[in-house]
Length: 164
Length: 164
DNA sequence: CTTTGAATGTCAACAAGACTGACTTAGTTT
DNA sequence: AAACTAAGTCAGTCTTGTTGACATTCAAAG
Image (cartoon, rainbow over the protein chains, first blue to last red):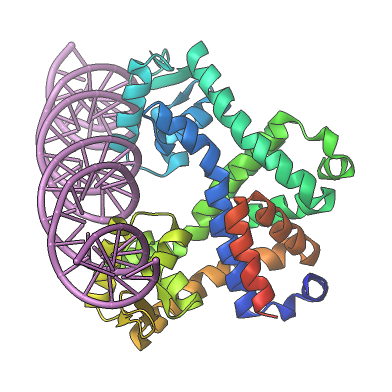
């Protein structure tokens, strides 16, 4: 069945697409399960995870940058950032060029948590990749990229280029 | 780079996995964006979408079944179900074999909304599949399946077999 | 140089939707 | 008759999103 399907895209029925949608739903649940467990033990949620992830990825990023990426209101993000700063996981430095801006950095403790969370997530992803096989991995990433909103995709691929 | 990566899984660095994680995050956002827009216009949320999806998929399913699949508490599901029944999108029938159970069905209006929501989602997914190419689709589904929690994966594949 | 307007971030209050825990009602099983 | 099960409800909490009002800072126009 998978064979016939990939031979010709016109054979993708609504029902097959519906199943792919469901797979996405279940897979995302698995994808977040491990970090969620770690986070709930320390009274954090996914919002904290997301903030930590993107501050790790782009140290010194401003609150406004983060807002654009996360797609939430600044008030919502601020609550999360405040607890992270209070708990000593994130450091907020006043901008030198523009003192209205706050530049965000992970402290050593913040980096440690980031590593713990992404380790858990990577372990599952690595296992899934191994079981699915090398060819599947490329296809997986290919489809994911095309499923993003165009502007987020630009942002995403921008980092890819930058990392080379 | 994608080539070298798929040649040997051992070359998957932590950083590449981290990027895959981020891709999953952005892609899921895109994946839910279209239904979210439709839902918010009618004062529903993702919770309603999920209930509608699984009742459509398994008409006559009981509340308990739904709880197991969705992984929420009955109080949480009940709130959603109540509004859907009140609004005439879902019908709840007392079980014939066991009259404690309530079997759930979509009304015509419910089916109409389901179709509207999944149409939006399918359109995006179909586009992503087309752009990524046939080979990518198989890999995509392969990886997703392996990323699920084992019990949900059993449930997921059970339907696959049943549909043949 | 001052005033005005825009950008950035913070505080407060509220809503949706998840959670736990205790309880009721109805039906089934032992 | 007693124990268990399915569903639903009530009350209270937490996370994470929302709006609205406000303080600070900067830049540009008068």
